[in-house]
Length: 263
Image (cartoon, rainbow, N blue to C red):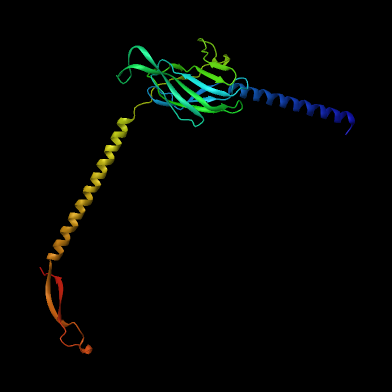
């Protein structure tokens, strides 16, 4: 291969490598940016359902370890049950309502849980992530977006994840968006179908049991009639010991043979 040809091939190889490297760098930057926020992932979103909300803490504040996470509940929620995390202590903040409030179940309440505070037993390193889970009852409000402003305190500094995008603006363009969950339509009720299926199973079991009992009665009747049709036809007296045994005074034994009674 001529020197000029080798130089051309080398230049093309280096150019391709540079393009591939630049693309990979952009992809990694996109992944890093997408996972940089403190966000929430629900396991359910249906109205009136109980959901587990997982709040991910992907990093600290400007390379400083996280010491505390304060999650503020939206006004649509009256309470939340925090899941125990061995790396954190947790407490509820309860507030007094300005006036009694009726819950979806019809009860009247005067207080509600306004915040859940997780405090790290040791600062969460900037390069490590953790997950904090809350159990909540979602409201009957399909189409409603619930916002959970979250304050992240670190050894040095803090980040307030509380920005809410105005209507028409992309939330991904925000620097510190509040974690959010959008409620969807309630799942169709299936209790009636399940109850009917259970009742059918019980009925089937009862029918099978009754059939088995009836069969047992029929069998017993047939056996009784069979024994009633038998009659003794002969009786044979025999010695308990054979004559060759030479045993004296052996008690006699009676054998009875039963044959069907003639009609």
